[in-house]
Each structure stands twice: as C-alpha cells, then as structure tokens.
Image (cartoon, rainbow, N blue to C red; front, top):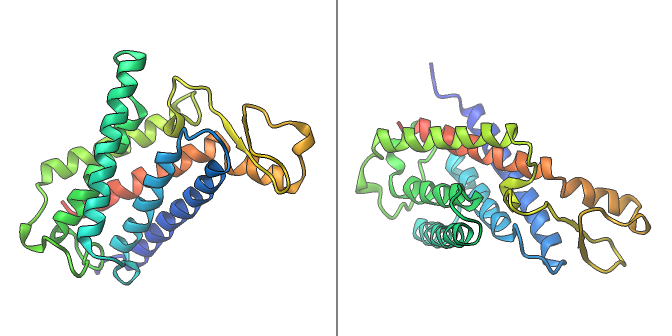
Amino acid sequence: MGDPFWLYYVFAGAMLTVAAYSLGLLGLSLRSSDPVGRDIDIAHLAMGTAMAGMFVVHWAFGPAWFWEAAFFALMIWFLVRSAQSVQQYGLHIPHEGIHAVMSLAMVLMYLYPMGATGAAMSMSGSSSASHGILDPGIGLILAVMFFGSAIFTLASPHKGSSHHGTHRRHALVYATAGASSAVTATPPESNGGIAGRGVRILTAPALEDLSHVMMCVGMGFMLILML
C-alpha cells in the first residue's frame, strides 16, 4: 500500500488553517494594549506555515537555516518566559513550557528530515540532510508529550489557558471597526454588531485551545512518521 498522500494534504491544510487563525488573533492583539498570548500567536503562525511545507513539499519555502534559527529563537524565548512564570507564580508547569518543547521539535524536524517517508518532510535545501535520522526514542517521547498536551487542553476547565495560562483570567481582545481597541473580559453591548460578534468568536477561549490541539496533533503525527 502506498503512502496516504491525501492525508498529508489534510494535515497541511489543517496547519495552514491554524496559521491563518493565529494571524487573525495576532492582528487583533496588535490593536490592543495587552500583549499576553501574542508570542503564542507568532509561534503558531510560524509553526503552521512551516508544518504545511513539511507535509506537502511544494508548499515549503525559504531556506531551512532560516526556519531553524527562527524556532531556536522561539525556544529560547519560551524557556525564559517559563522561568519568569515559575518565578512569579511558584513551582508549576507553565503553559509556555510546551511551546518551548514544540519549538525544539521544529528545530529537530529540520535537522533530521530524512526519517519521514513519502512526500512528507522531503524538504529540499535542508541545511543538515546528512545528519541522519532522529532518534526514535526522542521522537516518540515528543509525540507522546504533544498528544498528552492536546488531551490535557481539551479536558482542562480553564479554557484559553493554552494561550494565556491558568494564572490569568482570559482576556478577550475586543476591537471593532470605528471603535477604540480595548481588552475586557466581557465586551460592552455598545460595541455589538456583526464585527463584534466575529471578534468574540475569533477570540473565544475554546477556539484558541482548539488551534493548540490541532498543532499538537499535527506535530505528533509528523514525529510518528519520522520514527
């Protein structure tokens, strides 16, 4: 039986959907004065775009070294943010931690692309195609972590925690055409209308969590392909 190429396109489409959604959230966030969750949006935008190119070769663009550097920088950023969260709130598992691991996984996927089969991960111009195959144990551990994060996110009563953390009440970015930007837990009735409802849907905590779940599942599936 040949490789399920149609499935690669399904996952690639899902990753681009996450990237487009994250771009929308980032645009709303830039209109507000609250940067919380903005780094997650940037990371998901980059990860979704890069992952789509991993699943479907001709959707990939840019040199591998650029993506490696970008995800390495994101990994350092989230490690620092994780340390700051522990320092501020005490010993706990910060939501930035899983994004640091996801950034690390992206770096490894570019460093060791030769483990995947078929169309997936056959990325031309890899900066390190001669590095061989990713250790199956590492790939399996990472995949289990991502699948576990997806399950935990779906089961968690703290919706929106994948973007904002459990220590902060989820803040709804509310910005409509012709209205000043604001960050409130409940948008005022005066800012209603189609645009307002669209923003409320886009920034719904459950939808933010779903984008994280889709990213975790996509990355976990790619890592399984690399085993």
